[in-house]
Image (cartoon, rainbow, N blue to C red; front, side):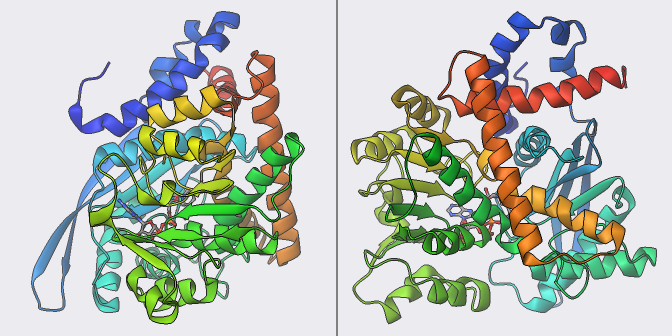
Length: 439
Ligand code: NDP
């Protein structure tokens, strides 16, 4: 039922999941008898609201806000908030849909949700960011709670924004509770949460490689993005002895054959919040490719020779032509830190080539899993050590890989982790929905 052109990303995500479920329905028709498909593609609730705030010049600005509470069969809604000018209700709906299956794969009690705004944080002062976040929370607070819906960060929402959102929630409700994750370490945040998505994507790659008798050390890696997920993917790759040679932002790509300077990257993106082109001020030997010079049919970051690739920026950033280039250049393992970064065409090519391909809903689930660990710490008033959080993250990523691989095997396509992830995630949610009756 494709009824709205504004939902192309949602249809892309839904089509991929439903295509993979065909063999499950052939074997277990009871899912069809319970109308699970019709129920699972419809969000339980979608909230849209107006956000009015005052900029530094005293002008009133207006943005759109969204929260999609997609599915609560397995637990309270959980999923990030995205602040980016490209955000529409369709973007949030696709992300919320993916989140249902990702959260199910973690094995933790969390349902799927997502939210955000078309607000552009770029170039805004701290005061403007704070006033926007306060206005956003002034509406959102009535829809969320530690046992109902617990948002986190995503593109454009990091510790600073979570802080302003949390402060406003506390001011309005008078409650100091775990209503958001990704909080500061001194006020309820979990150690290891900031690093979790990137580290998890590397652990997932490690598991895929191990299953094929290979290791991650000494491998050359391509990474897109220069934000939270990309930075901690690069950090973990270095720790494991691999060599990350690229990163990218919305205006261009850095290629540094000596290996990306991680301290500099953190300084540019976490502290100064400036464009990657400033990387050249310290490393004149590196190559900066502005996005005006990207190929018409894709992205320069995927046109280089390497062993492994980690798309960590945004959806549909890796096209069919990019996939051809990666395969020609000998890439044999792809682990997606971003949500749906590969187009449907690119995914098909990876599956036909039978390379190790970890789809986002499996490979980047370490972030939301660690968010749930933050919720567990908040509700028990505990603070866990980095060792404890990291060893749980490692075990969760290994378990997700095992579930995907075993399910793929069960349905006769042992290398197809897309099929494995979609069936394994769906089955958990669908079984819970059936047991909970028609709601
Ligand atoms: P950040 O905002 O920290 O970083 C995003 C990076 O991607 C930035 O470098 C940004 O460039 C670049 N980028 C964003 N949009 C575009 C675009 N349209 N074209 C080109 N570059 C773009 O976000 P995260 O690192 O948190 O998120 C990255 C991806 O990972 C997203 O797909 C997100 O949904 C996914 N993800 C994140 C999780 C998390 O825990 N944060 C958990 C699971 C998935 P610039 O620096 O110029 O803004």
